Image 1 (cartoon, protein in one colour):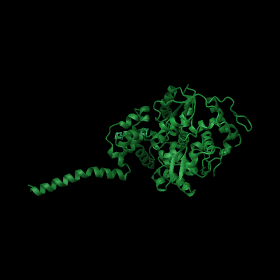
Image 2: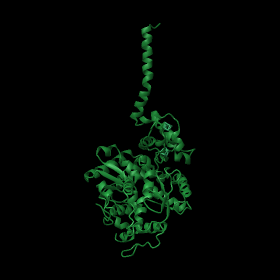
Image 3: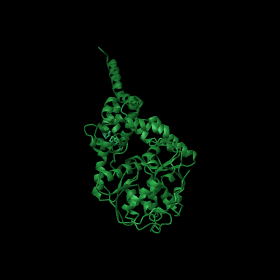
Image 4: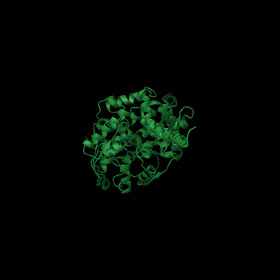
Amino acid sequence: MLGIWDQWNLFAAVAMILASVPFLIMLYASIRGHEGTVLCMQCQQCVAVCPVRAAQPDRYMGPLGIEVTSRSGTKERAEEGGLFSCTSCMSCVEACPRGLNVKHDMDKFRASLAKEGMGQMGPHKHIIKMASNYGNVFDKEPVLLPDIKEQKETITKFLKGFAKITKYDDFKIGEGEENK
Amino acid sequence: MTTRVTKPVIDSKTAKDWGKFVLYEGCTMPRRMVGSRYTTRFVLDKFSFDYMVLDNARCCGAPVMRSGGEDVSIECRMYNLDLVKKAGVDQIVSGCPGCGSQLKTEEAEKMSIHVYHLIEVLYDLARSGELYQKDLMRPIPNLKVTAHYPCHMHRGMLIDARKIHETIVGAFPNLEYIEMDDSDRCCGAGGGVRASQKELSYTIRKRKLECIEETGADIVIAACPFCELQIDEGLKTDSESGARAITPQSMIAMFFKDIGQEVAKL
Ligand code: SF4
Ligand code: SF4
């Protein structure tokens, strides 16, 4: 039979262990870079505004799914649930009453999936390669910006097209021409 | 090195207040939406802004981050911030909110670099009464104008898109501003989704096109070259509205009487 002092010590030890659980979860999550996700109260405000969720209600896990999977670290679920389908629109960030930044957590989680060769599609790998090798995500050219003078033809076409909307029927490209 | 596309014409107080800045063009504008690239420089030149474009600027790193390349993305961001610092400038103006929100970070703050979106420059011109240049512009046609509020401008760079668009459009006579439903809803292009999952990206865009059609607008302002690309393409292929998506600087540039002559000189 434990004495009153021992009972108190046991109670204090159990209480301390229980009280430290949230801190340990927070510590674990922050080591993995997902500290914010612990605060999610699963209210689904973010889900209500997500455009990808609206487009793919049965396939896309949505912002709450991102929070849950990134907190638990279940990468397979995240891959299946379409982590790489998020458009990073931040509607969920704006809607979240706890001020969680799902986009930030999504970026971090995408990076950890990519390190294990998960989730990324061809275009994602291509974008990273292009930015690393050529300094831009479109053209396999040296890193300098293209010369604007060489783009005259495209600029001309663009302006002529737009002049139809502004109803400038007399719009012309050309030196000396009267552009009233 | 900056290529000025027209001589400074307007002695703008707003331009003086802004002082020197780096115009960060990103990837999309100089390589895919070159019309907007030209009109950006045209408007800044007309109003005598003191800006420079760094030829060796690279991708900001935002699409790389969305693609799972966190390390490369951070390298890209720091490369560009260092480049601006080395140029001795402490302000970046970005025509793309995706780039703007990627660069507008604690790192930039620590380096005392302030990052803005080009629309903030245009807004200041509108507020000071300088944006509408009656003598230098053609008659402004009667047009209905609506605007898509880009996610990374509205929620990323925390810019009050409604107020800014209303003020810019309101600066011109004969333009009627109509706010569309879901004006701040994603167009479907971001996050690497347009690049990797076209169908999903188009499904999301469908709602945007419906909202545009409901307004009956002639022009949809999209102050993001990537949103401009996505919405304008949708208006051409999946909509009967006849509207065009365009950046605000392109709309403004088009009003200038001599833009046709200036392009000819390129
Ligand atoms: S809105 Fe915030 S707290 Fe609510 S479920 Fe979504 S992430 Fe969690
Ligand atoms: S950022 Fe991603 S998860 Fe959040 S609302 Fe947008 S698409 Fe959905």
